[in-house]
Length: 187
Ligand code: SF4
Image (cartoon, rainbow, N blue to C red; front, top):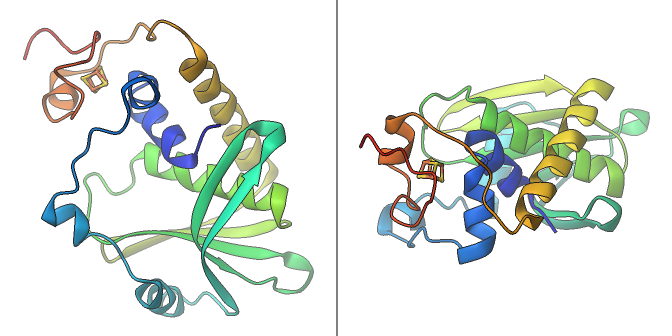
């Protein structure tokens, strides 16, 4: 199975999901990471401030075996009549750059997962450390997400890591740098 988090990793660097599945998650639960966890009440508050109409369900585990995709969605609002659901993914602390495409890829993978398991998703909001971005979900978004899920699955099933080369600034702060066969040699 792959998760929207692995899809995010794939878009950031295709070697990351391969390493995460092969050697496990290396990121230690540091105090700063623990403080980055939002409570269910905080997620609901963020949703209210973003103008997302209730009812809310928080931290919903979903699984779609046909695509071998599963994950826990931060917040699902709705259904809102025939339009369906509005989902939200929230990260407490600001990241740079905030509009990075790997965060959007993760959001789209959640939209796909919710569409396949709950029903149509018409909006998806990404909250990152005080800023929100909302997408009107369309068929193209879902097709993009499905392609990314399949590419991520293919990578994690390979015996060998993908051949990639990332810029030094990415590898420098990567938790897997010491184990990674593709780490940039010019560090
Ligand atoms: S060290 Fe570099 S190439 Fe390896 S997983 Fe990290 S970012 Fe990707």
